[in-house]
Length: 556
Ligand SMILES: [Zn+2]
Image (cartoon, rainbow, N blue to C red; front, side, top):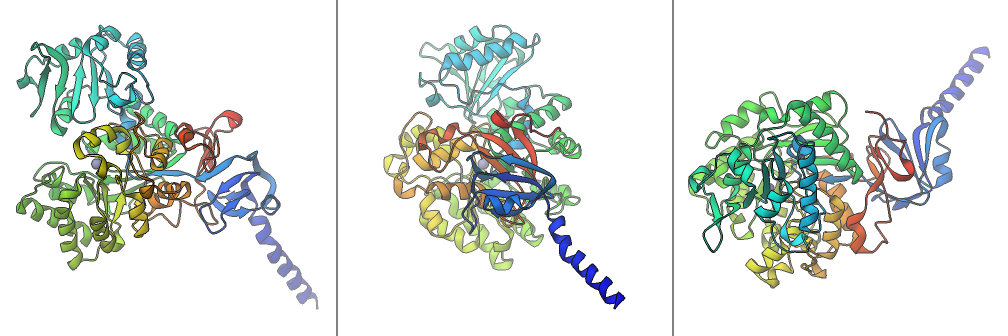
């Protein structure tokens, strides 16, 4: 009798225990929470141990609060899953963020020059002032590039380097002097000093990818401490724009030591964006040897929820990088590396610009796939803005996804001149890809060729307008607001094998979210690019808080 009473008491305790254990760390109430799950829109969310434990009605969620639970009143605001840029050169952007100037959002040349003048007024003698891309002439009311005279007036004493995509760079006279450039032969391969009609140097250097990367390599690097600080600042800036994750595809000027500042911030537990990175080809002709060496202690998936290794790309082999006519030998080399990656269960992502030549790449993927099925490995092709349905279908059949960015936001005017209106109206074919069930990831390709702002990219997905206001893509190739958001969350998460862990806001998902400054679902489309987050969480931790929530940001 006594035993059974004790037993009954214990059983009651056990029954009661789960209710206590489920006390939320944080609850968010009175919101419009776009879960992107079957639940649809919820009023409230409960978070415990970095994960979402429930989404639902206010009263149900309020019951999960205990005495120690933090309660956040959303006051009707819209909450979305944290945005994930599936193709951003974030690690490189971060290295330079504390020392570079950017022209993101500058609407006139005087406004751009004011940022140069401001930097110059604080610079030490001889210190370089650098704008490493991220702008385009159509964004300026003047619809042209700045001149060297304008630059020299803004910064007469310090050397200045202005990069335009990977096609040109402008230096002021102090910059030419600092790099000892007086003639074409002083510029890296394929570079040319531009001259005006009278034969005088304009200050602009024209070139291609190797020219511009080569020039950039001659500029002094920030110190380790500046790069650590830049990394912290840049990721907080991304948090301010609702980003909680990036996939980083390596890039030019990025070698193994370049990852040091990122690793330091991660070790210090100060990383506020989940970074999933891949390995970019290093030495030409030694690509496989370099990848084999570097990955001996860096197996696929190595890392944790904040920082993780995700295979190779976006340059796998130099011979197939920006090459529309690869030779048989170049394709064979690529095949050997791709096959090696498949045999090790590695994800592979490949930069490819033009639909007309992507069959070379797809042929190699199909050849590998016959020997080792690649669908489970989540390979991808990045860019390919003018993709046709035929090539998207070949990707779909292989289980290869598409990393799609808003390149046309900056380059629509140039694309129109080169390719004509008929193709521009289908570029990129977002709706065609979604209709065939292809996985599409959202992103920007920031920061040298594009701004990193995800809301600008989302707005462009929906209205197809360039920074200069040119309407491009047809409504037929335009996603709905919810579809665009899915591309930037769930879609992006797929490429890092994370779509069951993040990208939506349901029980069991990582608590990565952004509370928005206005309602993405109902506001005028033309204003979406100006959205910000007022509160961003990564794993339930408040990594950015502004406006009504400032003060809630957790110390780093
Ligand atoms: Zn690329």
